[in-house]
Length: 418
Image (cartoon, rainbow, N blue to C red; front, side, top):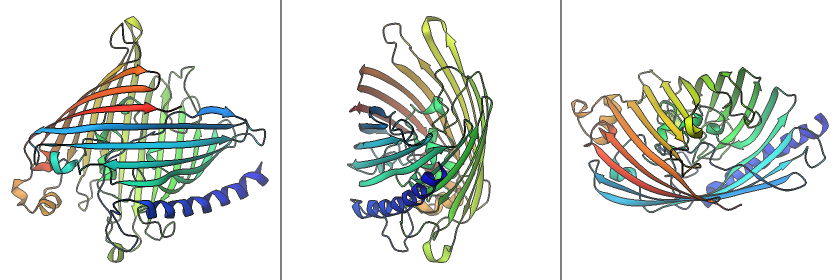
């Protein structure tokens, strides 16, 4: 196994760097040039965006889907209006064990396309981003990675990938659309160079897990929006540990997301190290922590209830978002006649430092509120085996700490091709 996996890993890392560079060349709007300019502050996150791969033959599998949505700001915020977003992704996986080569190896490769008709935040004005799939138009390679299971409890990953596939994932919050439920804004807003949607990056991850304990560490490139060399623009180091109780038969320990068990407690820490702040105009060197608690229960009538609490902290004075709190509930099989539907509610509160918010808006600090809070209600209706319809309603208090309370409605159509 070492003779096969070592050169494969080196080759994949090289190819991932090439694919990342090619992805930038395909970006439609070119939101940031490959030069020395600052990167956009995009907090739209979509964890675990590609569905489960479907088996084809001899270790090869594939998956593909399309999300299309219309978002309308009914009142408040900056102005009333509507915007449309479309995101599609297609990918393939190759399992070396099922192909008869060596056990525990898996390659993944995916391509993503993003289109939007307008900048959503220009309507609602929120810093948390009401839709987790809004991003600048682009077509890019999104994932090119290799995973190796060395033992039943040890695995590694290397390549071009999304940090939010493996860190700060809250399973019971995944159907909520507001971006803060995907990844704490104490990381994504304070460090717009985070290697996550819509700009994954080169990284190396090592994880261990057992029935009750899990732990993983990773190193990702800083500012993957500009594909120059792996760590020329800094790096982000992460650690996450978890406690798990009540492992169920359907729980999957192979995806490295550590979302298994009836009860889950996770804590994580991250550090972003900037290489040359004067040259690139990126976020300052900073650090933060986060924590997640989840519980799952069976209810009468084959219903399933999930609850979650998320917390994030990056209290350094240089960070515009020092604190975050998210919480919510998810009810599966809400109606007897709709066994595959689910209903979710959530609250995401982001505390703001007045000075950065006032400077970005050109206002006095006395006009800035100390927090932005989003309340969300969403329902996922499974129409067919490949088609879901999701209406969503959000009420956002004090968008960006300044604008009037906004009411945002969305309808999202999710199509799985295979």
